[in-house]
Length: 191
Image (cartoon, rainbow, N blue to C red; front, side, top):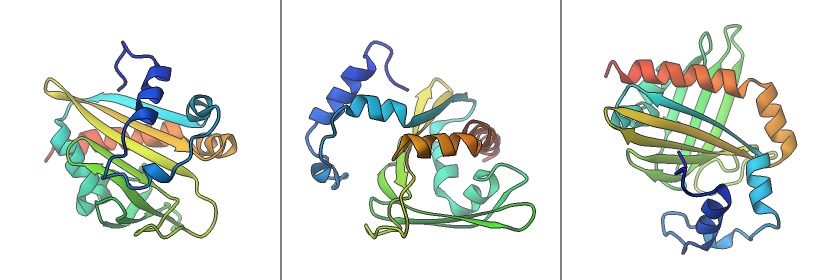
């Protein structure tokens, strides 16, 4: 969760002026975009919850395939396939399944992984920096910030365009990701 004493504009300026992080090799190739601050907030949706579970358990639920299968899709949907390689450039192959049997593939790639603290992934690549077929849709940042015995869980999703953001919202981002966050918290409490 952003620190309340730093404005959004200052946060973005800090990010843009930071030296290239070796864990984020793409950073030096990303050109700065005019009106980046406006685009970032216009194309972004976020969900924050104070969860009654420690950060390490929530992170484990995000990184263990058998655990991901139990919470990743909003019920009654299921997640029968979870294959993940948690490293920058590592592939993520997740398939959700509707109650009617329709499979919903969610291929992607991890951009940044900070154990116990942060996971950043996108659908723009399918692993090892291979672009996916079709237009990319989003970049998601998941953070786990301990607050006493609880964790401030934040899922921020940045879309490539306003149309993509609107489409994701219409697909039920807030309800679906909110339900998944509740399922995640409930599972983390049991491990």
